[in-house]
Each structure stands twice: as structure tokens, then as C-alpha cells.
Length: 228
Length: 228
Image (cartoon, rainbow over all chains, first blue to last red; front, side):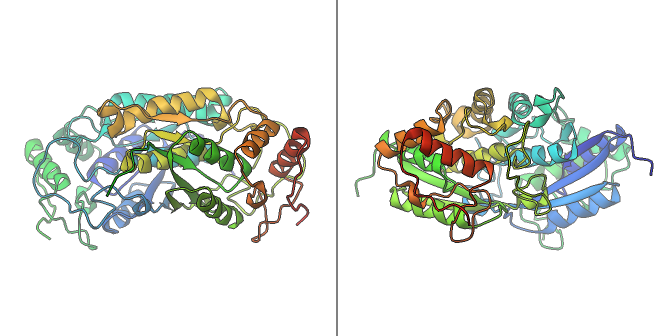
């Protein structure tokens, strides 16, 4: 048996526009991609279905879904049914912020990367249209990378783990343009915080608003069905 | 209603000797303690029962158990039934090392700490009898703390999160002596990697060996029932 010589990358995927673009970018760099998503108690399963579907369509070597019940700690409109998803833009850190979510997701990705011997972890964080979440800032990502290299065998063995954030400085319109150029089909991606189980978007949450504006600014057709 | 003015601490508890001592230490510093443990796919539930029991006995304000299935990523004798727990001391990083476990646990603790407004997270890591795990070293903990302050609202709001590791430089014997001085009853704690559901210890895994030696070196009676 001839073993693949390609480098492995772990890609966090949510089934949304950003992480699907990241997966296309990682693939275009020649990585064997392993994709990871989380059943963390979010409001709908549509994004998990979209995540496994896009992983398959885009040739991921293996896709895993980790069960993690963040409803136990609550604190966000996405994990606590008693907090409504807002339908207007607010100021400050919004109630859709899930406490420490990127840290938790990157940490579990770090564990699987260690098992796989993968030195690159891709995540679709973005500091432009970032909705005010503290864990989408470049300083945070840099600090996570330092910590990750001390946390694992990779660092002990002299390898270097990298947290890759190819979207971090892009606008939503630029993200869509890059993805289109790489052949991404955005129709099956789900961005909405409160989509129906079949993946129909509300059209009014922060995430829907950013997506809509992105297609308009990119001058590209948005096939998303809003108004669920 | 008079609200408590005491500071809140989040304490990671596993039902074992070390984290039970940490809980006693946090309590002795005057914190209102919130305890957190993980149903992560470990080999037995005895430690989870011990964790909730010790939390209650030691006056924790609230105890939570988060479901997180680390068997999905495997890579450790503790989360993959196809890897045996070794019965002799080895060299290097042992197979009982769960990839990125402390990072994952601290990350979820960070999320709950943010919900609670707690600025101190206590964890019972130890750099002396640390079994060769990379995520028990002081440099790692310091790097996690830096990252944590960038990851969350606390940092944005100018507060300072601290990762507290009061056991980090203590021998097992010293840990036991400190705990005894604070009134800890170690009989109900479970250290064994492969305890029976009723909490009986194997007596031969790394964790049992360190516990046994600790009591001998402390010159204190070990009431643990070994040889399950």
C-alpha cells in the first residue's frame, strides 16, 4: 500500500459560509483535510447536516462530529432557550456570543490534531465582520497558538502547531469571492443562527444580515432562501 | 435578600485526591466554590460520583457535570477501549495521556467562569508527580492564562482571569498533608484509572502507584481499598 505523503490539516467546519470557504482554501493548499464539527446544543441541527454534507462534497478524508453539551453552562442565546436571538444590530458583545466557544472548539481540535499528527488547524474566524466576539481577534489566535505548542506532544517533540485563520482580514464579500473562485457551492451552506431543520434561514439575525450584505457587496447572486 | 459578597471561584474536580485538595484550598481562601467535572468517556463513572459527592460534602455552591464525548477523537488508554491501561511505570508520555485534556477542560471552565463572573479557575495540575503529561507544566498554565484573558469578556472589560494551580510544586505526600490539615476525608476520593463502578481501585496503574507512595511518604494511613 502506498501511503499518502500529503500533509494533514484539521479544519473546523460549521456548515456555514466562512468555514466552508476555509475548507476550500485548505484543500487548495494541498492538505489532506480532516473536518470537525460540534453538536454543542445549538438551536438547530441544520448546520451539522450542512457541515457533514460539505465535508463530503469537498473531499475531506474524515469528518467527525463531537458531542459536547454547552447548554449545561448556558450564557448565550445560542445555547439557552430562555435568551432570544436578537433581530436588530446591537452594540458591544452580543447575546449570541457563546462563552469561550472558539477556545473550546480549538482545544478539542487540538486533541484530534495530536491523534492525527496534523500540525495545521484551520478556523474561519474573522476580525472584520466579527460581530464583536472577543475570541475572533488576531491577538487571541496568536496566544492560543503559543499555548497549544506547550500543551501537546507536538511541542515536546519539536514540531510546530499552527492555528491558520485565512479569513481573518477579509470582508464577507471578499470571502465569498475567494470561495467562488475555488468552486464553492454556497447554496447548501447554512449561516442562520435559528434556521429550520431543513436549513431555511430567518433573514433577520446578525449572521443572516452579514451573509446577505456580503453577497450584495460582492455583486454575486445569493441563492439563500430567507424568511423561514 | 442579602447577596453574598464573596468572590467566586471555579474549581475543576475529578473526584480524585488532587482536585479534592484543591477544592479544600479554594474554600479555605474564602471563595464561593463552583465545581465542574466532565463525563468525557472515561473508563468508569466512579470518579464522577466521587466528584459530585465531594463537591457536596465540601460545600460547593453549585456542581455541574458537562457531557463531552472525547471517545470520538480517541488516542488514549482512558478514552479508547482498544488501548490497555499499563500496569508498570514507563518512560516518555504515557498512553493514559488524553490529548489536550487539560486544555479542553480549562476551556469549558473558562466558559462557565465567564457566565458566573468568576475570575479564578482552580485546577489540580502537578509538575512533580505529573506522569509526563505536557499539559501539567507551569509554562503551559501561564500560556493558557494569557490566552484566556484575550478570549473572553473579562479581558475586554479590564478584569484579570487567573488560572490557579496550588499543587503545582507539591509532592503527593505534601498534597495529602495539606489536605488532611484542611480536614479532607480522602476515603471517598477515587484516583484509579480503572476503578470499579463502586470506586474500588486496581492498585497497579500509575495513578494508584502515586497515591500509595504519597500516603507512605506522608506517614499517613491510606484507607483506599486496592486490588479490585
